[in-house]
Length: 274
Image 1: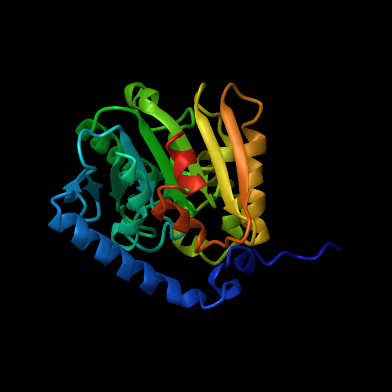
Image 2 (image 1 turned 135 degrees about the vertical axis):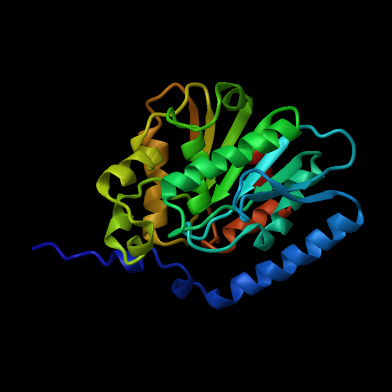
């Protein structure tokens, strides 16, 4: 008989990263410092409402001068953890190139189903798009990667007008096939059944024609994340879209996001199509 796979272990990141448990505290400090500087320079509009829940809020980081467009960063945390306050510093790269950056929080599981989080992110992007003119560039990390690619599938909650403005989507260590998550202990909170897993898995959906997507993962990430990254690039390669994949050398699941802080990093330039 084939060996039974430990799916809880397959989706575990911190235990395989040196000093992995220390990362959230580091992110929180960097983010708070960045927010303070942005606020003091009058370049932050904080806690803009896009829905009725207290977590239906997003922050806007404003560049100097007229914005070239809107970059949207959707955080991860397996739909179970974190909020926008951990990731503010990741706005630095796009902001330096003249893009306004929107960073939403959202209601987490188990209070919200993953399908409900899809609806929330659609509302957040729609609200931010109403504030800022020009092209929209989206990036999400881990569960956020699922959300931004879900936004450019044919069952997207976004209107055609908003979809037409999305010029680039980057899924950073994204989760594109949710079916294996049904075999993890996390599913006690997700409540996924096969129908929900299929309907929220970008790799099992059809993309919107003409989109431009990059699947980006750290070469040192867990095998399941490497598989998920390659899966979407493969599954969507037969459609009328531009799709590419990157395995960034020397990066793991927690430091793969660091490239967003550097205006000259290839991740920022890919996101902004520079």
